[in-house]
Figure (cartoon, helix red, strand yellow):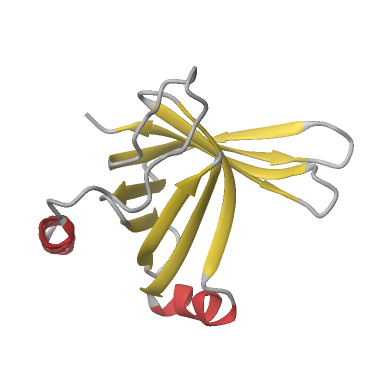
Length: 156
């Protein structure tokens, strides 16, 4: 419980520190006929999809044993993951841009386990679809086939 309270406090300070009165330098750019939805706020992973070579898709729902959240300010992102069976901490913090349906996360630092990945590749690109209360981020292979997707709902 003490660890959770500390985490909430750190997240609160993160978002207070990220608040900026100027307009965002990375707004969503979309067709005029498409409604613009902001990523700003907190999002909870509700399920993820694994696409198999045979065309089948495995859908795995989040649970009390596996939770993940992403939080976006105007230009900053922070995500955290809880896996109760894993003694490792999983989180990352950095900048992001969202333009033309592509979310790019440029992570600056993270948990010890995540730093190995950040040191190898600081930027991750996701194809993204978003509406008012949910978004899906998709990873595609070099042939453009979907490999993995995460589905998030806005935390209200």
